[in-house]
Amino acid sequence: MSSPVGPVTSRLVALVATTRDRLRTPELRERLDALVTRLSEPRIRVAVGGRMNAGKSTLANALLQERLAATGATETTRLVTWFRHGHQARVRVHHRDGTDRLVPLGDGIGATIGEPGEDISHLTVETPNDALTRYTLIDTPGMDSLSKLDPDSLAALGDADAVVYLMPHPGERDVEAIDAVRGWAGGLRLGAANMLGVLSRIDTLSGEDDPWPTARRVADRYAGELRAVLSDVVPVAGLLAETARGPDFSETDARALRTLAEADRSAVLRKLRTVQRFRAWEECPLAADERERLLDLLGLHGIRVGLELLDEGRRSTPALLEGFALRSGVEAVLERIETVFVAGADRLRASAGIAALEHLGWDAADEVDRRALLALQSELDRLRLEPALRQVELAAALVDLENGRMRLGDDDVARLRDLATGVDDARRLGLDAGADAAAVAAAATAQIPAWRRLEARPSRVLQRHVRTARELCEHILFNASAPTSPSWQARTPSR
Ligand SMILES: Nc1nc2c(ncn2[C@@H]2O[C@H](COP(=O)(O)OP(=O)(O)OP(=O)(O)O)[C@@H](O)[C@H]2O)c(=O)[nH]1
Ligand SMILES: [Mg+2]
Image (cartoon, rainbow, N blue to C red):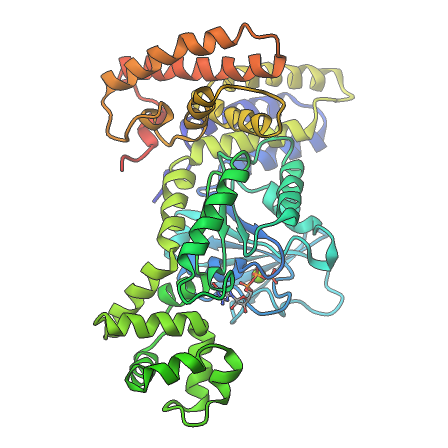
């Protein structure tokens, strides 16, 4: 299990708690109490966001290895739904007036819960699920439901520590939606450091039998175009991932696939061109309900993949499931969630906490309160020097680069990108993951003067960011020279 609160977050919690005790206004105290509670949660919050019908709930189910979130072809998720680890499976219905009630956990959460007239703000599903021992997952309604950006979704994404943003066909509206999320999150907190893009439903992207070449090309293009705000764009066949990792695909389904594989292949492939043809296929060796079930579990693309897997000799149910998982691309998402989000929990959460404090504002009517908040502000300035948090600041530099507010040569851009997004010191300096402390120290030493030279440029924006880059390098150098000192670095996994 992930350690509850990391060192930077612990320092922040202590600061907030001390300030809270000095405050006189009950309302302010309550807000800081709420923040302490949020920062002390045992797991980070990973939210799944995107436009309507992007495949968010499907991916959520794939991550959870259970079909807990309702999925469907029309607008399906209407309420922000939190999935938290709990020993008893149940749903908490939260009302906007702050009260809540418990209901048993049924099938397909999010579609039908709630009584008429009940004003629900969100749901929390508590369930003993393995994935939820690593992070809390938040499924959100499509951001553009009702043809405008949904405020509940925006708020949920803004309150998360990290976001997986899904796009079936990336486009202008996604850029707009991502900007809106970032605006809500308080300036530039969400960005390349804590937002991962997923190119979803890749089988619907092109009409080709093998969707991967196009999917990779499109994902790469968007990873490039959106690199200021997304750490990467990973292609995924979500439906295949959901079935591969879920409990529903049975021996009976495997048998149905094997029967289909034994039929005349060219006829089968012709019928698999469209859902209508497959459904209307009268001489099919499978009954209509068996075909319907395969469509539901795998889609046309998944059925074709199933036939290919059988041709490769994957005949048993476990072998097929493993093949589906491999062909879905979901491993890459799981890997990023672990190595970037879960491993970076401390810095992600501390920066979310600082953003929440900034959001609170520093104005207080009471003189004592004002002084306490001022003291907190200067402590926060000190805390921001933590390298873990500097990296989050550098994500803002990437945004400024992308928007043309700052200009750098290609080499410096590459170095800055590594510094801002590398998951360990070696990779922050553009070295291989396994590089030793001496190599890291040498690379840091080599970079420092280059950043210092750039600090002399007239642009304020540039000065600020390259100073952050230089200070980060200095800290890495310090770390590499004193490898036994306990530090935030110890928490990043080696790959
Ligand atoms: N063909 C195909 N269909 C998919 C894939 N992923 C999801 N779907 C289907 O697309 C539809 C929408 O998926 P959902 O997961 O409900 O989408 P969502 O983003 O949660 O939708 P809202 O909650 O309404 O915003 C469902 O019918 C899914 O079965 C995929 O990879 N391929
Ligand atoms: Mg949904």
